[in-house]
Image 1: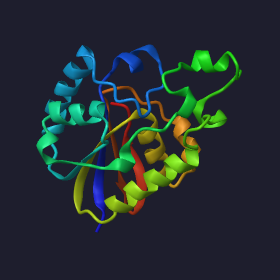
Image 2 (image 1 turned 45 degrees about the vertical axis):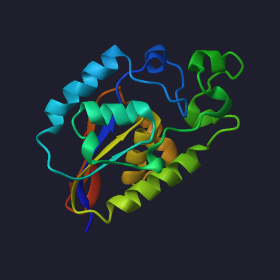
Image 3 (image 1 turned 180 degrees about the horizontal axis):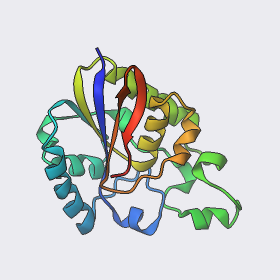
Length: 188
């Protein structure tokens, strides 16, 4: 028994995501564009029969799920919460690079937040849960968390999530080719 298809849904845009600010645990609502695009996801998701729908506890993911028409079926999964950026919460990459040239969240870490490995461990727990579910699963979550989850799905180190760009209000599909875990579609 294992989920045969995992539909990853990144939440819609927020004021902070639009401005490039690291939005981890701050509970920022969707902006107007984010709400409109989340609603539009419902049309794309209606073609799937979901055995399980999981969402991050943060309002931007829960609202995306609800606006896409799956909120009444969703279970909150605490491990789908975004990376804890610690002291970098609310800052842009440019602001951080003013004191740490060349920094990225994947190669430079954060101060007083989670390590990439800790986020990867949360992704592994979600994947372990998916291994106990038959059918198709939807996960509503956040950019960095979903990128890391996809890397771990493929058996790659969590840091390799850096290779997978992910826009707001997009769908990505994880599945299998024979018994091998694969990315079937990304950032669509």
